[in-house]
Structures are given as structure tokens and as C-alpha cells.
Image 1 (tube, rainbow, N blue to C red):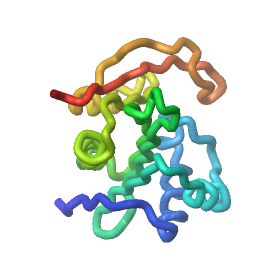
Image 2: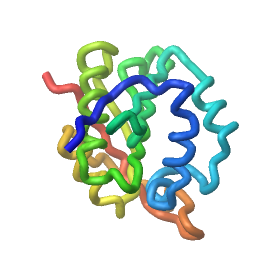
Image 3: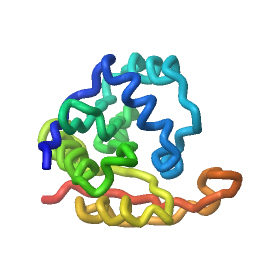
Image 4: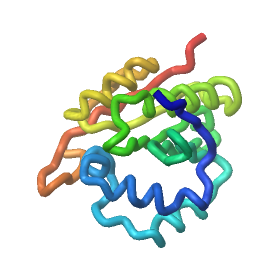
Length: 165
């Protein structure tokens, strides 16, 4: 099995990110819409803020996963970060999500002064819930009719991880 390399996302990753997020099995479990444009991804990559980090996972120099971490800018919530994660449909069950989460939790715990990390995940995305639990995330609540997906409203869990002592 090839090594998973985690690095910061770069402009050269634009088309790979667009193609990955255009896969039905990817946008089904995210808040992305079908048919993303290259211009939209270019804008996302160029939109920077002091608290945004974008990581990609690569196998054999091919982008297989993407994680966007946003640190809250409100001073009273500056100890909190939220993130979104996607993995290429053909690369699932190879440890890509775990590699990205390991890198993210290391950043949060040891470099960014983050004590609380939050996410939302669709309640029927059992594999994602399992990997988040593996990294210490706990379900704190459920958002009813959280998002529209394929013409129906679906619920989402609110999950969070508190930095271990």
C-alpha cells in the first residue's frame, strides 16, 4: 500500500479538488452542490483568512482527500475551530480520512491553541461518524432537517472534540 502524504493545499490542486468534489459519492455526504466549477474552487483557494488551513492527502502524488480547518475569529471563540473533510470515492477505506484527522488534531493540539474542534456530519454517514469517534469526537446533538440532499431534508449530528489534558 502506498504512503499517504499530507501537505498544505496549493493552487496546482484546484482541478483535482474540483474533480473529487464532483463525484456523487463525495458531494452526497457534504454541503457541496453537484457540478462544481473550476472558478468556484479557484475562489475558495484564493480566499484566505488568518484562521484558515487547507490540507490535502496524496497517494502517489494524486490528491485523494481534502480538509479545510477554520479557526473562529471572534475573540471569545478563538479557542474553537470547525472543519470539513472529503475523500475521493475510489480511495475510501485506505486511511485517508484518518491521516487528515491525525494531521489536523496535531495542528490544533500542538500548534494553533485550539481546545475545541467542531463539525457537522449527516446522521446516515456511519463511516464518517466512526472515524470521528476514533479521534475523540462526541455527538453533542442532532440538527433536524439540517440540509437538503437529493430533494429531501436530512438530519446531521453536531460533534465536537475537546483537547485531551
